[in-house]
Length: 309
Image 1 (cartoon, rainbow, N blue to C red):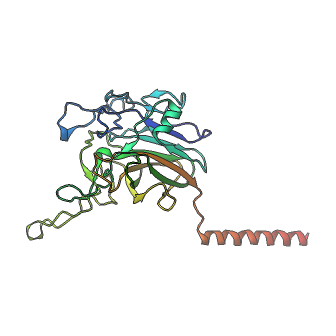
Image 2: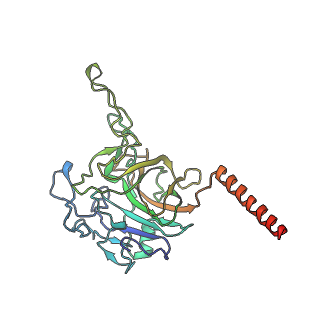
C-alpha cells in the first residue's frame, strides 16, 4: 500500500524531511523550492509528468520517512496516501485500527527513523496576536503546519498539542478539512488566512465590508479539494481543550495547525508535540433504545417458541 503500512500494523507516523536554513522559513515543501523567485512569488516546481517524483531542494533532504510499505523505515520520495497536491505538507498519520494512538513530534521521528524532523509552528501561524501597526488579527501560511490523517475504521480522533518551548505558554489553533490538496499548479506560501477583521466598506458602501478569509472557508490556502469541517482556537495539552472530530473509514483529512495569539508568524516559534487518541463514535440514544427494543423482542420470541415446542 502506497503512503502507509498495511492494516495489520499499528498506527504509522510519516515525516517530511525538508528543512530550511532559517527556522522561520516555510518547511514541508514536497516538490522543490524556487529559491530564485521574487520573495512574494516563491512557488514550487511541480513535476506533472511524474507526480511522485521529488524535485530536490531545501537545506536538508526533502523526501519522507514512513511512507514506503515495503520498507517502512526507508527515506523515500513516496508521499503520504498518494498525495499529489502542491501545497506544503509536514507530516502524515495512518490509524489502522480502533483505539489507535499516536504522537507527531521530532522525538517520535528520531525514535522511529533516526531523523529529527522539524515539527514546529509560529506563534501566530493560525492567528497572530495583532501586534502589527494596523492591529490586524490574521493567520499566516508561512508557518502553518499541514498534516494528513487517515483512519481505516470510523472513529473519533482527538488531538492535543503541547508546546515544547518552556519560555512562554502557548495555545494552538486547529482547522480540520475533509480531503487533501489536489491542486497541480504552482503554490505560493506567502499570504494570510483566518482574516477575522473585516475590511472596511468602500465609498458609499461599495464594496461592502467583508471578512476576506473566514474561519469556515474551504481551501483557504488556494488549494483544491478541501472541505471545511470544524476548528478551534483553544487547543493545548489538557483534556478540557482537546479537539475531536469524526474520521470516516478510508477518508483522508487535512489538519492545519499553528500558534494562536502568542506571536506573529515568525516569532515565538513553538516546537510542538501532537498527541492523538481515538475512541468509538457514540451511538445516538434513540438508536440505542430502538436496538435494545428489537433485541428484547427477539428474546421474547425465542422464549415463546421454546415454550411452544
